[in-house]
Image (cartoon, rainbow, N blue to C red; front, side, top):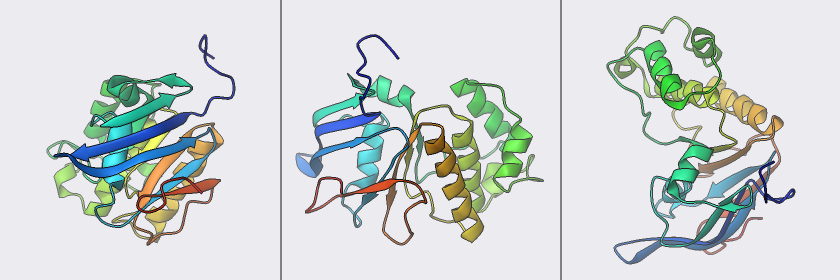
Length: 216
């Protein structure tokens, strides 16, 4: 525990968090928190601000108002980016590189413990695709490569934007296993959904963007 860090502090806490674009509110103000071993499922229709919320929490956008704390301490965009792992709609791979090269690049960029990257690909169903350029992968395979990259990061907070999209039933089960492992080791997960998929099989609360702005 870091000095002055409250023993019972939530991993993530937002107070009055809001975002506007061209002076038009996108979401907020929002009050919510996420503790170790929890998942928070963000619900809402198209345009409700789900993706924007995750991008703010990932340090990719500046909030228009409010405060975010990580482990009890106020943080800025740089601290948010360092304390979280983000999986967005776009795969985030280099299309000309093979799947193994993409993982090697990601590991060099993010640091962390050395890992068997060939095994990491096998665990997400990409065994035999080590040399396949990412641009030749299907949408579902690119999502699996993104999940392999996510699994290699040691961030305590995962931010997953529509993680089940483009996946078959085996892929959905894979996402659930990864989320279970993340919360079992004391991490937390914030994920978005259009509501087409069931919540992951872990302790989960919901945050509805729209009329209801507080977690259930």
